[in-house]
Picture 1 (spheres, one colour):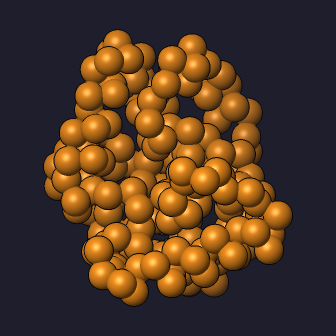
Picture 2: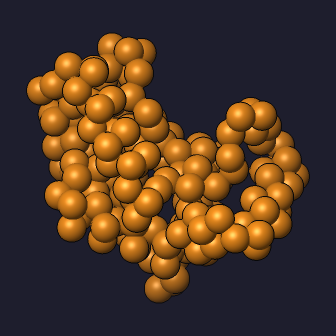
Length: 171
């Protein structure tokens, strides 16, 4: 599903390539009927925020948001285990899940990184994606709330992910 691929790119570290292709995001979002109007609005608002700044400023915001504040960490198991030993087996299990599904994770990637998770769920059907995200719903809910509290422009994107995971729980 394209929405997860779009969210993965927007939530990942901002690059020149992403900024150069940002108008394409608007087009993809506008053309995809599976993206709800409220989701389109949130994504377009985020894209407008990005367009209003230079790349260095966006990168600085990203680092200050996700790398400097543990409560905003995009590595989901960090919110459950911190640096505890229990995190290792969870990461191995997730890596094995990806491998079984045919997804190759780069050596430097940690498998619980939210943009990587979104890349994976973009390969699933709608219900499969929602169920997979539903397994991480508690962590994603807390992450979204933390970002909202900090008034981060990323908060609405994380809330989209959160809402989609909760829809599976209600089904």
